[in-house]
Length: 374
Image 1 (cartoon, helix red, strand yellow):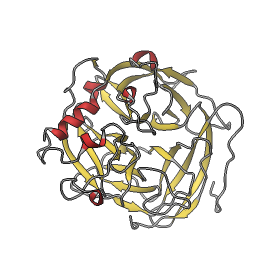
Image 2 (cartoon, helix red, strand yellow):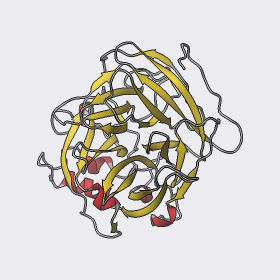
Image 3 (cartoon, helix red, strand yellow):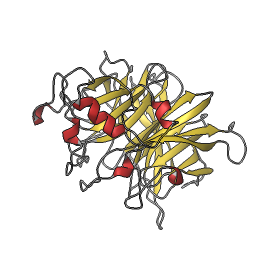
């Protein structure tokens, strides 16, 4: 079903919050239109999604550690989950500010099963306060065959609490070979630095690398220099991705103490038009979709770089991503994508989940060209 005009779905009342998902046609020759839209029941904002079998998806939210299985395309509005898994008892969370702030997820084949690795933001609170509970990478194994009352279920696999420490040491100690504090990550993670500043520390993307074993850690902040060490504010133009070589080992392990277990590969900086990475997803070899957005808030109306944009990428660090001219109106907060298991061709259909907080994600009609300016 195509819609040729902008329309809005109002937020239901009551104590519950709702998140919405929209199917967007990525048509790189003609136009991109919203095909359908659904709403789902959840107590807070959606922040990450993992495709299961084309009918179901697991969704995380950034204020609770309850992972929910939804039909991707339910008939009912504000559809309830068909299954829920509460990860909180397994994550060693302190009672003060207990949220992990889950922002990303990646599914990896590990020991004969699908392992979903869930990643916290690893950043401070919005008022720049330390939040140790957000330093969590944890794993759940997927059980089930897609049938029955609970088509898929989850079993806790393990966790790692020192990824942030390891990233800071990797940059500080020049383990990437580019020079000590090349990306200034320790300064970004310092007390009183906002996670929503261009020099802040905030992870929002996590995706399996082309080899199927490593994963890409993608940063909303900081932005970094794309052509040398980051030594000045005006140089902060590019988004940062760091390869994590052993995500399954960490997410399925029980390394409850001891730093230094994360193994990192080469980093890459991407020119996304002075935007950070808000989501990084792939479901087909060498086909990646990047949702790029401001490190802080969008402008109203959205104007570059304070807007959300889509980029396609091969996942090859020698290639820069290709901008697409899709525009997201003010109020749209795409935080995760469910991709088809096929090429991101001009007819590819992508489903986004929206971190829409107190507003429903607006539907939109726009045109998309083969490529556009960043």
